Length: 194
Image 1 (cartoon, rainbow, N blue to C red):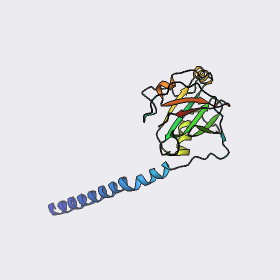
Image 2 (cartoon, rainbow, N blue to C red; image 1 turned 90 degrees about the vertical axis):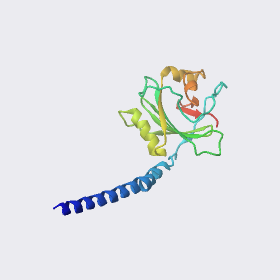
Image 3 (spheres, rainbow, N blue to C red; image 1 turned 135 degrees about the horizontal axis):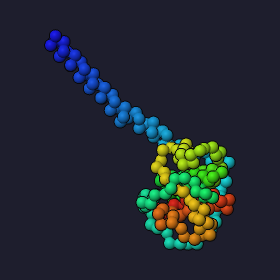
Image 4 (cartoon, helix red, strand yellow; image 1 turned 90 degrees about the horizontal axis):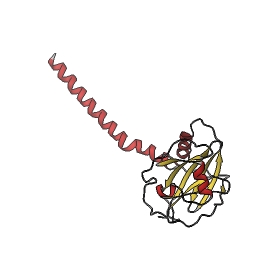
């Protein structure tokens, strides 16, 4: 009986070692292939228009670092007469002096996706269907550019007025770039130069 117990113990040990080896190979090699495949999505900007930007006064620009936010947290709901902006920086850009970005601008009634190519915003309106605008903005980013790191901020009516009037607001101090607005009222983030 003791001999059968030892044989079962040896079999169980061998089986568990084989299972650990297969599991570690799967985690190390197979799963990263699926993640990289989702990471390389190209946004569908067919039918989009190049947005005209309201010119801003040349205010002092902050030095570019690698973090989008500099420690300030924002509310994650749509303020009355405002919107939320979800931003993802695509750092693989080498031809422009600024990183490209992909963004989602959500208001109470409309939703837009924006791709910045250097200084130029390319804007496309998308169907708006959600009861949770924060999740909808995140899903728009993930659907178009994959699981890149992104940040979502809320923009109040007062801050929209400051952006339209080209006045300083809280955002230039907390983000490595500035918020701008197109003539059609679509807010987007323009990253600082490298």
